[in-house]
View 1: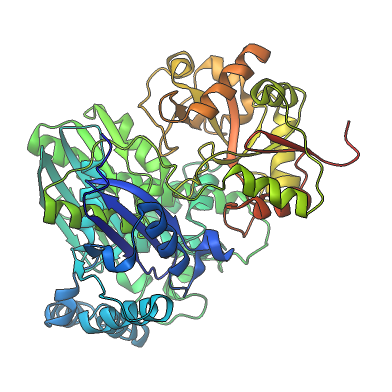
View 2: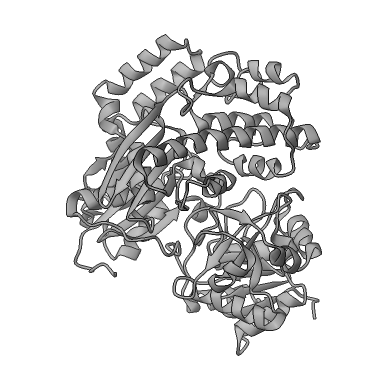
Length: 585
């Protein structure tokens, strides 16, 4: 259903601490969303106020800041202002004495999320850009409720149990919720310092990657590891099963409470436990590192699965929604899907705090108007350049381009011949996954092409997996059991046909993190897949994000051109215009 232009516009703003973002909602539907990194070309845009994202969302909504009905903030600002959070911090500090860095972090959150400070930060940024307008009111919602509302209400399920898990949000780190129609209430809560997000972030840094950036590398590394009983026992000392057999407990002396010589994410007690120093960035990844990643991933999955099993037994509801930053862990989502108790899973693709900008706007819109979102169908919510802008950029740069009569057929032939293609089409995707708007595409039948994409285009580690995009009608042929994974948030066991026909998109553990493409919600990519099937007999493409390591996904034509010329891409397709690398036939 399309929202009426007469309905009020609500914004949601997330300031991070990384990945600041803005969303606009009208009539219970997200009509615009953007992350600041895509505009400033600084990955994660740490420390930036999302003013460019704000201006884009206002323009897309056809309004001005003083025409906005309210701005949603996905934190319980009242709790940070009235002393509730200060009392909570004091209580948990009595249970386990924190170090000075933890006390400083607590004091920092009390300052940051105090209502007066939050209002001052936003008003100062707005006044500098727009002048002295009648600013819209700020309205806050509890952090985990924001994640849960977004995941549950944009799911396809009428009833569901919902798991939200992250580093921390207000007091909570993990909450299990019950969704029945419009009802959403917590049925189990886990609070700091027991955090799955902190646990995984600590091992991410121990393994030589950056926390809140490299977790997906640990997940990919785990697929190459094997079960090691000794490592499982050691990791189990950090994250253990709670006495009730349902929850988990994190030992904070390995994470935040102690001396930090290597990282702010783990104490010196962790390398002492493991008997080895942390891996240095750039150091060779050994089999031991892979086995440790396996043990860490297994511990995360076990903790989540215990909670889901309990929730299903408690409620009798077998559909599961997942939100919060930990929901980016595709292997965890897939393990939950494989539980015999589970009927289906919806993991929200905008599950992190950046996506919480959309969640906060949806919550505020519902609170003030009663409007509820429908099932999420597309993430094409960002800016799109009109054709005249694309042509002007190309002509100003004196770049020759072609306009083939049938761009889909021509692109398919190039892909089948081994070309690696940069594909820019329509509105920019929201979130970290490329879904056919800003993608790098390649032939999934060729492992050599996959390795070329990794080495000379993406410029990343060769052990990292790639994902397939496939037509919805093909999914039953390639997977024995799957969900409608439109947003690359799930991985399924690849059938023999997929392994034989598209080995480049089957991971070493025999799974594929798939994007199932529907004609009604992603028509351009769907048509390209159909053309590729006519050309090769395989309705699948290797699909990865259009960026190189360390940079955000491309946004504009200029971004796409810079990345094209700086990498080993063979062909760039800009909304139907072909740019072929000079010297190629």
